[in-house]
Image (cartoon, rainbow, N blue to C red; front, side):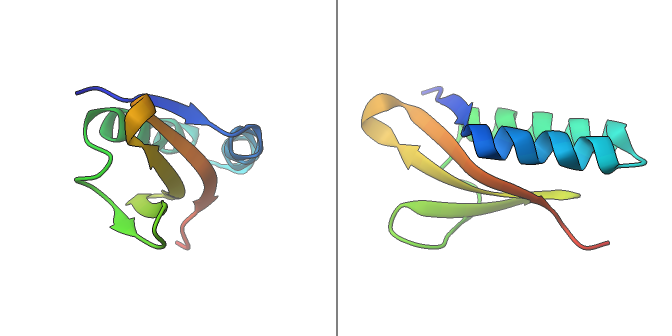
Length: 85
């Protein structure tokens, strides 16, 4: 079962800010793409639960909080940040 991955606008904006500030833009882009692909394929099989609804995933140099909506086959990325170097 494939899931649709949607980023909240605030998360999209934060990712853009991270990318603009990064010296290694290709790594940021690759991590964001890997997050999308992993979440679309198996959102409950990766990451770690943080609350009943929110999960945490690291794909260095990024990390995200996301929510899985099984009935809608939807994953919502709620927040993204850069991991410490």
